Amino acid sequence: MSFQEYKDIFYNGVWKQNTGVVQLLGLCPILAVSGSVVNGVSLGLATTLVMILSSATIAPIRSFVPNEIRIPVFVLIIAVLVTVVQYLMNAYMYGLYVVLGIFIPLIVTNCIVLARIEAFASKNPLKASAMDGLAMGLGLTAVLAILGAMREIIGHGTLFAGFDLALGEMAKNWVIHVIPNYKGFLLAILPPGAFIGLGLLIAGKNWLNLRQEQKLKGSKARITPIEGGCSPASH
Amino acid sequence: MKRIVKSTFQTAINLVFFALIGTAILAATFALTQDKIKESEEAAKLKLIAQIMPSNLFDNNIIQDTLKIPADELLGTEEVGTAYRARLKEKPSAVILEAIAPDGYNGKISLILAVRENGDLAGVRVVANQETPGLGDYIELTKSPWIKGFDGKSLKMFKDVDWQVKKDGGKFDYMAGATISPRAVIKAVHKALQYFAANRDKLFAANVRPTPDKMKSAALKEKQP
Image 1 (cartoon, rainbow over the protein chains, first blue to last red):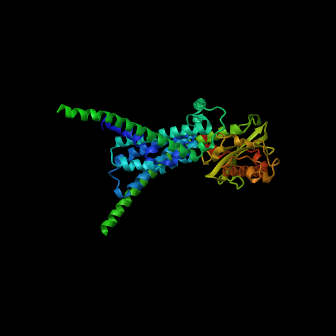
Image 2 (cartoon, chains in turn yellow, red; image 1 turned 120 degrees about the vertical axis):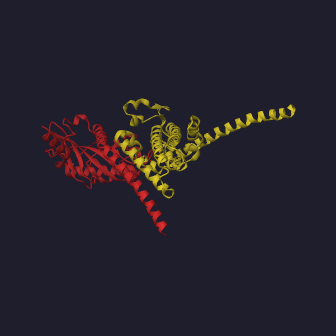
Image 3 (spheres, rainbow over the protein chains, first blue to last red; image 1 turned 135 degrees about the vertical axis):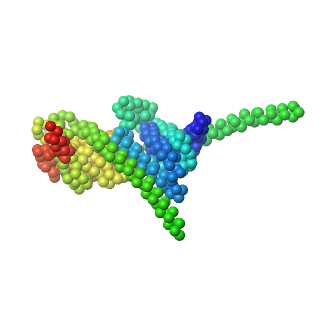
């Protein structure tokens, strides 16, 4: 695999086919956990880890799995890996485990994991599959972080609150009170806030895409007449 | 026909094979992490105890002065639990109880309570819950000071009907849109106080029964020389 191919996979996962704002897969955790930056980033990274591991596990054994039972086998492998990650977090990152609670086991049901395995890891070699899992996971993490930041600022008036639960005492004073003496805005913290925030993010992504397209078109539009104009003259 | 049976059989074997490998990996991970998980949970619990038990209430080693208490309907427990006893100059001053509110919005809510010997609550904390993030989770101190509303309350102070959220005619605050979680917590705390009232003397009984863990380590020590 060449460097360019890795770059393409990475670009594809993080931006072009972003799970959160383009594929819109795994909406349940996106909407439920994005109430704060720490929750979003933590679950995003946990999902990324599961995606890398499951892609890297399934890619090398893909030829041994009969086609008819591939979905149950994939789900089984994902479930095992999620539970392993859950045990490890429970043992070594207890604070974070308590914060994320039910959403760690729910990674199993995040369709983005199964979707990437079905669409990519079951057809590609190990390294590329692991890269795809990493890129897709990071794309999801980025969306969760941005959405978490939006909702945390609007809902609580803070940013980076609660990082001490994930990283220990040293992160206790990371919290930034963006809006001092803020009374809080419940809508942003509740599920509707997540829907509205995600909607805005999708709109923002589409706007960027559109602008880029128009730029390309614009530059082409300027170039074409010159080409067209030149060719008859040269004859 | 024979071919269908054969391929079905092979597919089934294949699935069983993956299931077995998965089970083995899970069992191994569980065996490797369970001690550490217990340790982490214990450490988190001790941190909580320090939060709800004022340090001027005891001079004994609370962690060592434990009592195994059988499962009880009033505590909502289904397994043998641990009560930690606080003593000041040998006199009982408070006890830490574990209680479970079975009727949270998303299942059980585990609580820890410190009750002074006169029946006043020194403090209550939520140890574990799966309430809706950003909605029902204000029962945790990290999210809201709501749980501190129990400090100093007692059965003497409030009648039975007062142990409800204000919306239901009680004396306890709640947040609009999430009454199920506080209802469950208030009910569990109320019942735990009734348990304390009924078992007060038993809870403070002086003899320290060694826990199975300690017996094991004691047995190990004897073997060692």
